[in-house]
Length: 103
Image (spheres, rainbow, N blue to C red):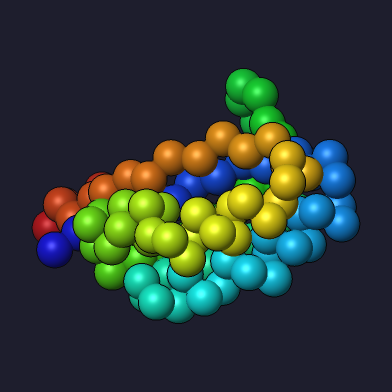
């Protein structure tokens, strides 16, 4: 079964409000098996537009990734950011097929 991922791009406009969200979101991620693969960090926008912060969270499945988004725990955490960030987020199913160069 393919894993599920959240891929987010974030511009924080109110760091204090965003801290409230960050402090609260871990409970939902843990409940649904979420694991940070990317959380901020240095990057270069080599094509297209970007935001100041990037996040990739891996879940055991696409269903778990969607369930986390829709959960009361995550929605409560989201409400705590009080408009403190502009976020583009997709929930996407991972790829489980052949890889380049694989025999």
